[in-house]
Image 1: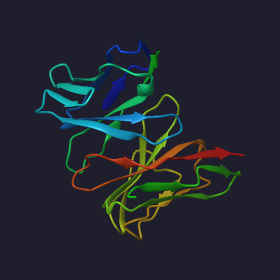
Image 2: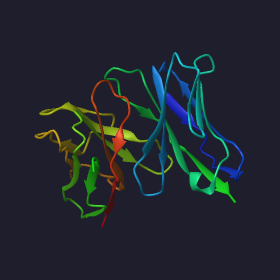
Image 3: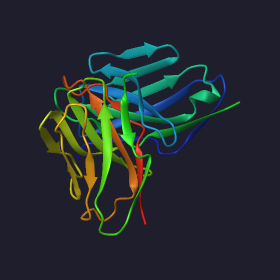
Image 4: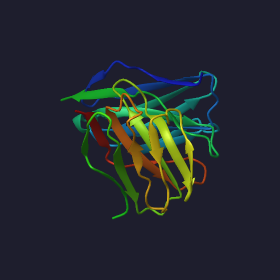
Length: 112
Length: 113
């Protein structure tokens, strides 16, 4: 079955360092991947979208890569801040009217 | 302000009772979705609607029902047939041109008494 897998263990890093989160997919060939941020008890908020023909996408301190050979997307937050602490969700779709498939998310904790 | 709203924030259900969760959007989006979120699991799609008066089952539709009589509204009813309804329910919308960026509401937490 189609799977989107994210590291279930929380990622703890020091303020100012770069956080790197991983999203792997199996039995699936997504046309694009999305990353969302979710704070406790709140709805997810869209951050970035990257298409299969794009290697890398940047937005301010955020960077996403998409490696179709490794079947993986990496999500980077540079110069991390305690305010970046949240759960980050990866989602994939084949595009068109195909549904989004979500990973379970990785919790990031940035310590001062 | 444009956005998507859900109510109530918390909802309590008694045994054998149907309850309805509200979802409204003023983003002029064609497509709307309902997801269920359980601890340690990804969002799972319950129902979705790409246009008014039309909707399709998602991956876990059993025990749920929806309607889409207006573009702005997509209420979800959790019926008594749903034996494990305790979860965080999220409504989302998108422009409908494919399923790209989705905009989520704040969620409703459903608890069973």
